[in-house]
Length: 109
View 1 (spheres, rainbow, N blue to C red):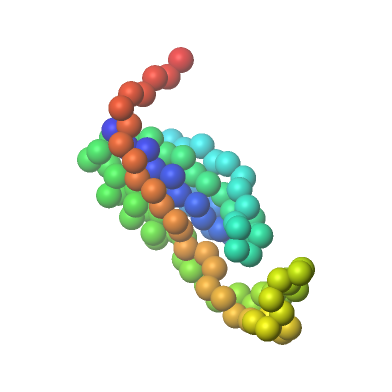
View 2 (cartoon, one colour):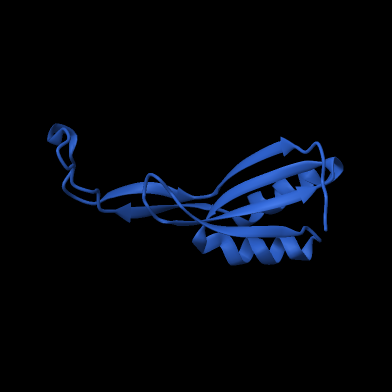
């Protein structure tokens, strides 16, 4: 058995949740916040048999696309202002960061 943790952008959350359910994966959704852009994310926790891990990863990949987004950088507070860019920049957001971990035991009460 494996535990899959997938951190996805909020924009992809509902689409992924529906797709996981359509493919008979049970998941738990947790609200989370990204450290770089301070934007909303959703962390999915999925438990599945080893033979279904590749299918789960494919479902995640198919439903979580990266995209370009303009963001206004935060002004440095007491930091080095030499590298501060005072105008919006384009960054890649979205997609999914996925961890697959072995599960020693699973209990459902």
